[in-house]
Image (cartoon, rainbow, N blue to C red; front, side, top):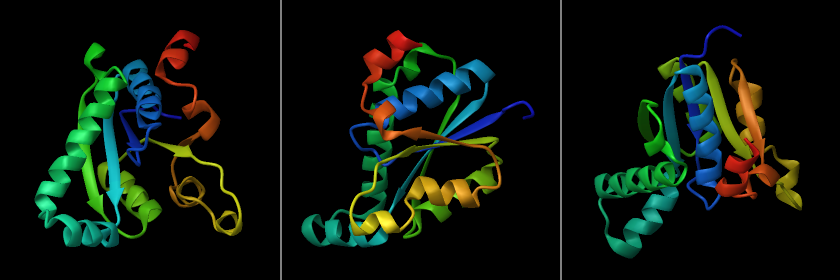
Length: 158
């Protein structure tokens, strides 16, 4: 693999986001690469929120960006010189939006977390699987078990 200049990490902003982001921050720091943090939200989810709260979309996007910054802070971004860009994308096709962002931004590596799938939904590929198949570039899939260890354990192990 050529020199990594840009690492794109996709986050769902769940409770495991800081651990995934800490891994991506570590990679970006090691390679002195820019880190692009992407969150894709479903327009149907926003429509439900709009119906409940009346929150305008720009305010919702600002809220998501604040959550991304909080997760990055918890991941230890303040202790590094990593350049970070935040991207919030509205799209029903989460994997497609991640791949499109990677193409548009020229990401050299895509980092995604993978959750175990159970029951009938397990028959459909998850976001990580779809990104892996469609990305056309290196993809690091961080398994759910690694994301559950917590940032303190991850830092001690590295």
